[in-house]
Image (cartoon, rainbow, N blue to C red):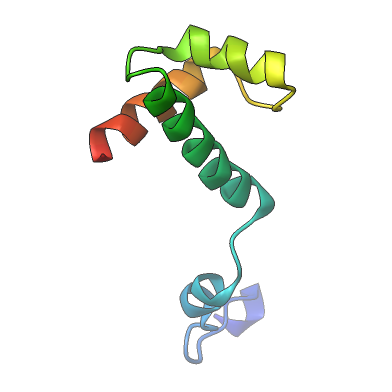
Length: 81
């Protein structure tokens, strides 16, 4: 297998190397955004949906993502609390 570039030793340790790496910027930003969503949702008595949260973020200058993604994160954030 070495002639085609496959390491036949201990597997290269790619799984553990990936686990040891710090989170990517995208993952870190997503975690921050989920916290912002939880705060905005709770501050508005739990009735703000994705569109209103997205509009609030735009008013405050918080760079967020597409409405659909915000909606999914709102549901995940509120379901876990």
